[in-house]
View (cartoon, rainbow, N blue to C red):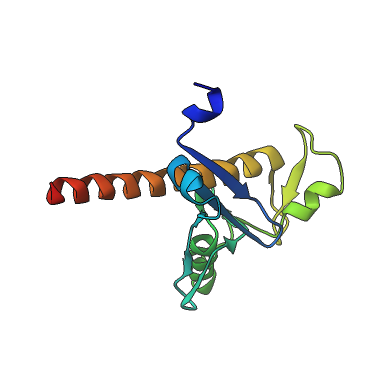
Length: 154
């Protein structure tokens, strides 16, 4: 058996300037039809929008720990702002282009629209980690649902 035959799925993360998302294909689906690709659907509750990508926005708590990403980050930050409780939070939107200004290094900082700074590596790591974890959780739920379905059929 070749190494490539041992993988159960292939996945891709699209860390975009304005929107981000992910897609994956199982080995079974790929062998059946290579065009079968699963894409996450994201929902912006505040505007009733569903799309295959979510906004490239990330929100950190005042202690600089990750809070949320995408539409969820936008919605939560907007609620904070409406009550004027957003001042200590770190909200980054469309920050990817700032990475092109200089070569990314361990000391590079990114700024929020109101001037607060945070480590670029911390922000990027949180975004990629969130997308990976979200994808793995989505796949886990699908697999669990398939096994429950098979048990009830059998």
